[in-house]
Image (cartoon, rainbow, N blue to C red; front, side):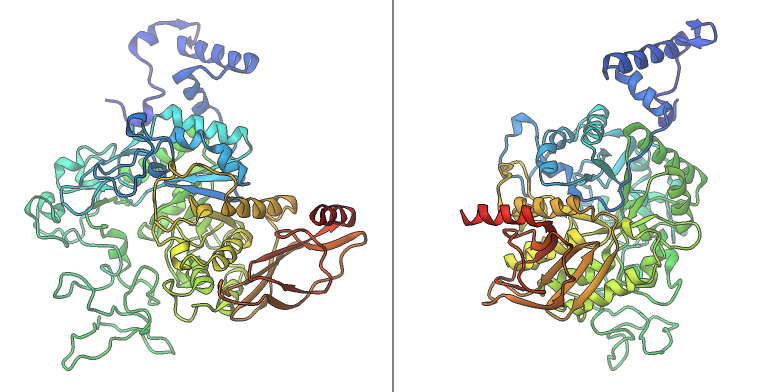
Length: 618
C-alpha cells in the first residue's frame, strides 16, 4: 500500500523493467515533456507535468503587503449546470457547489478590482455530511478534511487547482491557500477514524480524559445515542476555560481571568453564581466569557486548549511522530504541487507552538495564523520578532477587534472601542510601534470575514461608515483582505455570488478599484505607517507620501469634516489632490470635506491636475 505522498513518484514493476541505460521510461518521458513545454509552450503533459513540477524547486511570489480577495469556494461561482444559477443561501442539500474553475473563470472580475492575489478556503476531500450528531451540518466550507491528498469532487480536481494557480501567476497575482492543521472532520467512532487519510488510527487524535472509556464511547458526542459533550474534552473557549455548568455549558458562568490592577490571578476557578450568596467572579465585567488569549495567567489550562476538541471534530495529536511528520510532508507537497505563495492557517492557537514552528520552517512560505485574541502578549507570541518564528504572519484580529466597532459602533463590540477612533490609534501604536511581530507586512487586515457578521450588518448599511472602514483596511500596514461580496455590501455572511451579475460598475466595485489603484500607483505596499492625528471621530494616517483621512460619522451627519492637520508643501510642479474625488487641487493646507466619505490625498503633476479639472468642468 502506498502512502498518499508517494502517489506521484511510485514506479510500477512494469516500468522498472523498461529502462534506457540508467534511466526509466518515465525519466525519458519527463525530459521529452519538459522539452515540449519549453519549445512549444505546451503544458499538456497531464500527470507527468504535475510530477515534473514536484521535482522542481518552486520559487514562491512575495505576498507581503499585497491586497487579497478572500473567497469561500462553495459559494462563489460556477456550480454544476444542472443546479442553475439561483440563489443558494441555506441549501436543503447542504452544499452550494461553487467550484475551483468558477474562481479561475472570474479572475478578470477580481483583478479588475485591482487585487494582487486571492485567498481561498480549503478544497481537500471533505466529510460531506450531514453529521450523524444531527447538529453540526455539512463540510461545505472546507474545514472538515477526510483525505489530505485528494481534492473534493464538489470543488473540482487537482488539475483545476493547478490551473487556478497557474492562471494567477500568469497575471502576476499571488495564491494564498487556507489550511487546517488542528483537526479533521467529525469523528464519533473508530470506524470514522479509519476513513481518514492518512490519519486513520485513534492514536493520532487527542484523547484527554478518556480514562477507562473505549474510543467509541469517548468520541460519541451527540451521535448514536450519545448525551453530548464532554467527552471528548472540549478545547474551544469558553469550554476550555471553565467546567460545564448546570445547563451543560458555560453560559451562566464567568471564567477566571486576570482581574487586573495588580490583583493576582485566581488559583481556583470561581464562577458567577457558585457561591452562596452569589458573588461576581474575578474578571472584567465586559469580558464575561473567556476565549483563547483572554487569560493573562500564563499556562492556565493551556493543555486543554490544545488537546481539547471542537465539538466532534477529531483533534490531531501533534506530539505523535507520524502526525507531526506527515502534516509537514503534506504541507511541502501542497506548496510544490500547486505553487502556493502563502498559507492561511485555521485555529492556530489550538496547536502546539513547537509544531507550528517546525511546520513554518519546513514549508518555506509565510503562514498567516488565525489567532482570535485581543490579548496583545498572547497574540504577538504567535509571530514573535525575536528567535525562531512560530508563524511569520497573523490575521490581524488584534486590530480588527477595535477597528470594526470604532468605525461602525454597535452591534460590533469591544470595551471602549464603539465609535472611538482614539482607541484604534492607541492599538496601532501598541502593535506597530513596538516592533514585536515578525513582519508587519504579513499582518492580514480586515473588518469582517466568514466567521462573523458582514461589515454592512455591523455598520447597519451606513454607507459613510462602511467606506471609511474599507479604506482603513486597504491602507493599514500589512495585507488588505476584502471578503467576497463586500464590494456589493452583502448583509448575509456567505450568500452565493454567482447570481449577482458580476457587475464591474457597482459603486463598491469602483470604490475598491480606486483604492487599489492608489496603492499601486504610489507603491504603498511596503511603506511605513504613521498615525498623524486621531480623536473619537477623526483619524488621519499616512503611508509614504499618501495621506488617508478617515472618520466614523454616519450618513445622518449633515455637514462635512474638518481635519486639523497641515499637509506639507507640495513638491515643485505638483499639487495635493483627493484621489477619490475629482482630483481637483486642494486650496488649503488643512483638508475640509463636503461629505463624510474618506479622502486619500496624493500629489499629482500640475498639468495632470489641470487636465482633470478641465475635463470635470466640461
